[in-house]
Length: 180
Image (cartoon, rainbow, N blue to C red; front, top):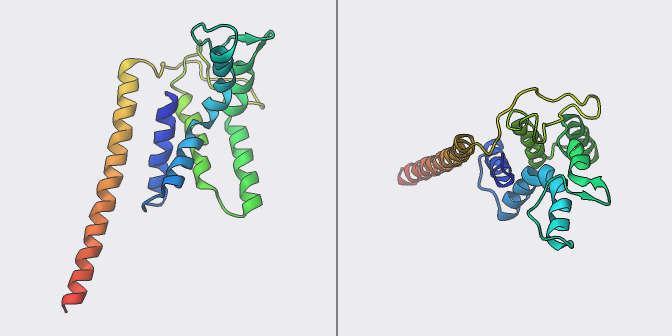
């Protein structure tokens, strides 16, 4: 899935966990946790391509001093093993679940079937195993891309409708109590 969609999906996930209005900061943090795996893996190569000596089209595998940065970082940021370890370390440190981090896990789960074996297959068991799904459909396939965005808007629309309906019911209840 494209990097922005990962962020939007985590916003919807966070709104689903506690269906209450989120602050702008909470929405921004949720978005960041959704995009974090791709940003950490691809941002260094992207910035080197933009600000380096070559302004060629961004190549995910462009070596820097003979080192493929994205391919080296990607297994760490797209591993359910590493995600769960960090998630539980944070839980131990702050003594509660930090729900926005679930966007990282959701990112990995969505990427697993949406990356082909030829283009950044998701090493979700790294460092225990380098096994990846032997199949996948590219997230950039037009009908996959469009359906994921449509699903995100439907999900967020449903949450908005549900919250608005609950707010109207609460207002109706208060009006009923005050009229008695």
